[in-house]
Image (cartoon, rainbow, N blue to C red; front, side, top):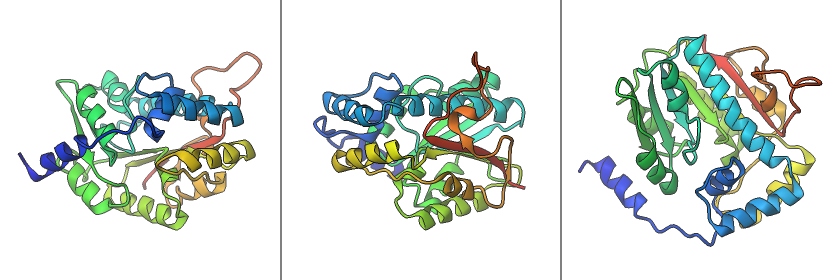
Length: 271
């Protein structure tokens, strides 16, 4: 057993406390998954009482992932993905969307949550032609994260950096900016940055405050301008940084575009 696999095994053996809400399981409930306990469902319901739109946020965020990956593989020709802050596996995971278009796509998932890591290793399997790997690392430890991912990905070729819902887990905004900059510095020109995170609407801020009082991992909402600044120095794809539901929606609804949600996203290309 290697040092890395030993570390992973030790973390996966850590006890899971089903009595305390867990961010990944609460989110799993909102997107319609099955990996949650009563405490997670109770927390999810409490947040929904304050902010019913959180369900739309969660599901639109998942739909954005699908649309963004389809564009990057089908139109931009990207074949490598570094998905940081994976969350619990559910329908339309990054590797499933990418490898449905090109089975040779290579995907590395990164998370530092032993619960997520255990589910990922059990449930996420690659196509025969491609590769799916998992790295146990904290997004703050950029150098180690990149070194581990480089065992699978060729960083001399374009890589899509997927950061969906992960930057809100870091309270310090300047630290977030530094992390994004260092990750972009590590990838080749022609790589892409994909970000989606919660914004500071009044209802969502109230719901987040209640969530943070009881959850093991607090979350920080930010303004659309703050999320937009993560893309400084890269070429933003149309339509720019917008409400998550409005990034290249697949079909127009009767009566107009989809309703906005309390989350913003964008996709940018490194020059």
